[in-house]
Image (cartoon, rainbow, N blue to C red; front, side, top):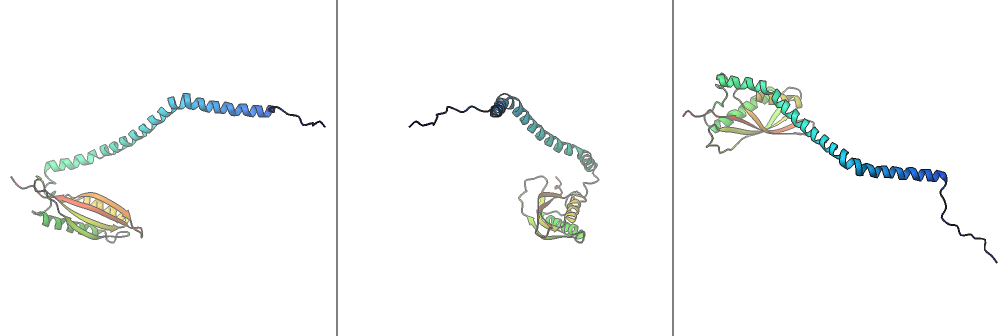
Length: 198
């Protein structure tokens, strides 16, 4: 009895399958050629340069903002050089303890002035910061305060700290939002004692 089973060799692709395979192989070859010949030699360096340009633009914007502040700072320096503002520029007290008490009172007065603005503002804690600055020509006095304010009153309080006499400086400002949406601000408020006469 003879079997009619025929062994067939590899099946040939249909014309449509051949075209599809040719397209896939062509695309794969183009992708490999792109990465080997173009991307690593031209595109990747350009992308790196583009990233560096973005960094330089950010640095330029920061310096441009500083330059824009120059006229205001120049006026302030000029008024100091004329001596008109230096009369009240230093803290009124002669010793650090009294100066720290004066700083706390100034902060209390400024916060009280904005206690009923918008969401209001309060000062839950305040304390002097002990500093050993006996070797400095001009002694700095600092106090640590915590503010609990709405956004607009906090901005107004910080603005008032920056203006007026004696000059005070806000350092180490850290702001966090509380659960009720108010802002908790922890900061250091500093001023300088008048230099002792030689």
